[in-house]
Image 1 (cartoon, one colour):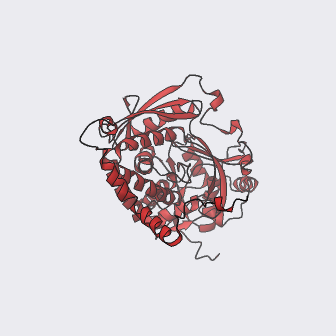
Image 2 (cartoon, helix red, strand yellow):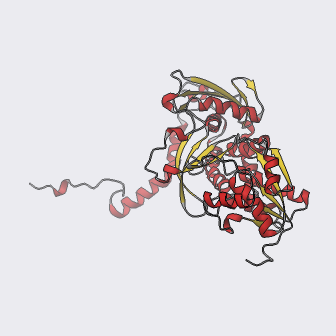
Image 3 (cartoon, helix red, strand yellow):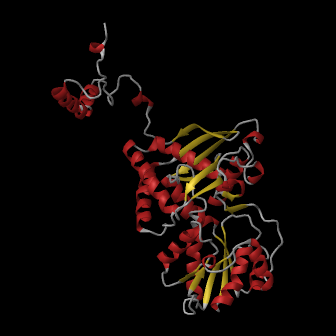
Length: 422
């Protein structure tokens, strides 16, 4: 690699304090001759953040930013995706996917604040996160250089990283490395690697860290009621809660009943399949409750069209295309659909099962008096005859043409009676 390509004066590094990002700090200084400023976003990953500044400075960084972005994460990324009903490949609630654009956005903001000319991340060259980080930087400030050490350096194993850390006096806490690769935030916990590399293998119970197994869940069912205002959850069991407390509360409730576990072989953006297990207890409850209110409050055409754009929305989020015009346009559509999605959904949790058992809304389009077969002015059963004739007219015309040409409709079973032997 040329010296020109390896030049940078000040780099903002997405930093966790783990082995990889701890090694990246001196590697950037050594290979780019730059000042390194670390940035750690608190998204509810439950990792120990105390002592992180001293560790970053000891590794060679000049400064560390630690910022609590949990509320922004929920209100500006999770809730829009929830309102859209976006689910990737039928099951994945996108917990890692929409965290990366937020982290990268704040990196860009800090880079501009600090006068940095580059940003760096610790995503590997095989996964989706490298795309999510870098597309965000390209969308927000394409003048920033992007440095991805995993695509450049010769470190290929934990042993290589430990050796490099020792050579550069990087403080590394000696821990037993999990066989699983995990990502955690307030929304979910993901697991990859280990025995999951064989999709035939059942995930081992000790792997799960958020939720209890259905077998170990309480023998008594629990009911939870969630109130939404224009598609946004506001209360749990009648208690008004802010975004962070609300998601945390539902995580607690769902986790103790084994809710929100999925096992998925998904199509990565970079072209390969991967096998992962996700734990999303609170998110699973919120999606189910939100869908329940949409059943009441959205008319047929709006609901059906919204289902189609949910697939596109999920792809955009998964692929790291958060900061795009099409995502903003889809948000505009979704927000119109949510104007009347206000009300309460009641769910029953029991040993891994999440059952919808009630929903109500002041904007409900379901009217018992209209749905019955009694006498009223809204629905006249006699009108059905004309409607059916018009609705079925294309089918009728096609059948008439078949009969005119062949003597029978193409859907009519052949008559084999004439071919019976005596």
